[in-house]
Image 1 (cartoon, helix red, strand yellow):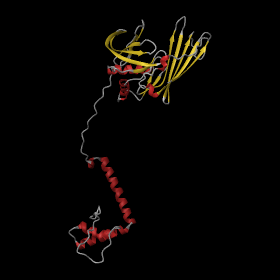
Image 2 (image 1 turned 90 degrees about the horizontal axis):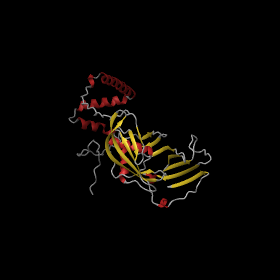
Image 3 (image 1 turned 180 degrees about the horizontal axis):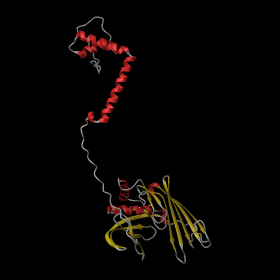
Image 4 (image 1 turned 30 degrees about the vertical axis):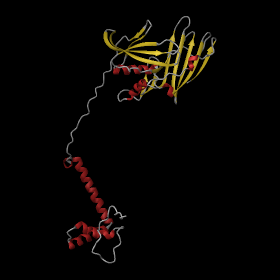
Length: 347
């Protein structure tokens, strides 16, 4: 993992790396990676996801790997307002994170425009692909919570990777808090509660509780320790589970092609086509008809008991691989039929 920090403004400070940067980077455990790989099961997720939270859309793979994601946050204090923008982009075999933090007056202008008294710090970090296996971004977290609500279960002892408030990799865990009935507008709805905890290595853990409807819609979000919460005011149209009908079984029926008009028509057309082709060939090769006539005449004159052997002896001289006929006849007449496998000579 490599990073580059740039600061602009009247209060720019030098970047001083802490001693914690020398610690080994966190890694997701096998339970978390197995849960992400299970999303590839048929009917779970599509090959490519488009997650559209209130911020700009994010693109994810079927294993919830980030292809592109952008997020923007505002903290409006009268004394020191702050604006933060984070961009994640997959580049070949690494993930590039660009984090821009502006302290001072927050306006509608872009972060590239700096007014007096403001400080903008830009940090670009590159994460190699092996180091972010099991990473769950903000957009992937929404999809992951929906999958947990569908399955009504949370992977036990699973330790994922996430980004803390400072943009550093850290551990993220999930815990099921059971089901509960809450009031949304004028309706009572049952929700499944999942608590996510981001274990930052530099600060205290941050926990958020997500109240999810049966189809995965987020109904309520609470940050533990915060007096405020986010909650929907109207129950959305719930997505019903698709009923997969069994495949119909068709009994095999006997085919009587003579009674089928289409098949019988094809048969007559093919029969006529072959008749014309055969007649044309015999006209072009009169020697074939003469050869067959001679054989039939010779057969009727001799009237042998074994017709097959007689035919083999008659057409044997026409074979290219026929062994030479001995000058003197022998009582041991050779077979007119060609052997499929030559006899092996005795050792």
